[in-house]
Image: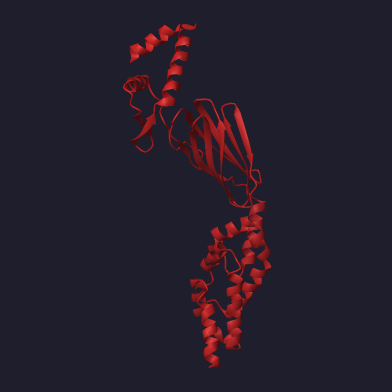
Length: 311
């Protein structure tokens, strides 16, 4: 009865362990090193308690690390617990190391986590790799919105800088994570712009993504990727297309089809445009262009006659 209760107690704890760690224990070739079943139960319980005090992503990483599947021996469990205790504070206090360990866990033996910490510190000190950056630029009414993600290999992102026309916007980043997701929205006049988004890490390494962006009413989004090269381009409306739009507007149709061109993908995509604010913008632009052409203000009836002729 005593033996049965001990086995049941062991199984209740054992079944809660991650799959690969359980497999490693089952593949052990040195169970005989444990003096008694009670000692073995105590080791497994301690392993369970130490594991489940860690964040879930670290548990998964340890479960996937090398050195477990072929046999997680009793002395290795004790070594693992010792090494885990030596870096426990750094697990919880340094988010960058947690993320880095998760992504690089396959390179390390779970019984010697301290080695991964030392390697992380060395890579962070000699880091010259710029962060990756990607996101989306969109028109939000009269505003431009830049949604972005900055991800670094070992040092935290520290700043994002957006240059558009003569405007420069710098956003300091405060994070303990190697990945930062954010967005900046600001007012901008309608027009064609070159947009540069630059991400910098704590070591001063920088990476930029550059795109051409058309900021007009109801315009579609332009994406940029980690290479900094243009991912998607859009062609502005031609004079013939604007003329057709005005003719459609005269028939009081609230929505019309417009074309988005994907030059690198080889096909056209079609969307819809509301004419209310857009028509006012294009009408005012046509007037400004005519004023520039004649080099003097035109009387109202001339503009009206011109528009009527087009319609």
